[in-house]
Image (cartoon, rainbow, N blue to C red; front, side):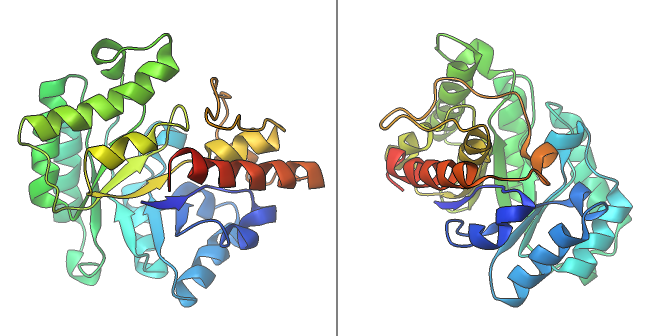
Length: 265
């Protein structure tokens, strides 16, 4: 699995030493030229850049026309087609509208990532089948409300962690999962989730999570063999310009290393 941990501006250049690829949030392009230039430089250096539509950060996907223009200008390695949180039908419509409303011939060389959305297993499975047919790459989120009914756990975070594992296991069991298509895991609740996939599938190509970085900014260190048992209610995009002390940087570097050890990556 390729790993990318979203990182504040101050450490973005050094993040290339611990990130396998670079994960871009499009809404930050408008307000932070340094942030945008980082990804231009990464692509020029031959690194992969995955461009996200910022739906998790904004609540709704970034403006479609602006997003398309940023894809044209940046020419990322992959991009996430605009989706609608937990709404399978509207996500599928959004995917079709994306293809119908833009000149796809100009970006047809860039693989499209389709996000699975829904509130029930049937909706998620239906959306997965659609993305399997239409998208080049399939993404699955860490925080569907469905996990709270489908998974075991002592709290919401444990149910999210266990819920995504169970969802993927169920898709495999039901013959829906396509092991020949690359998959991306969006975010995480608890950082010890990813080792579970070694026994399930070889098709998870990439993951992104700012979990070890956000914890390090608040000087919280991963516990060896466990990681964290709680999660700060803060998004990395809100810390993008955070000033980092030497202690912060030491803790971030410790956590990103432990993340790989924890998950056998």
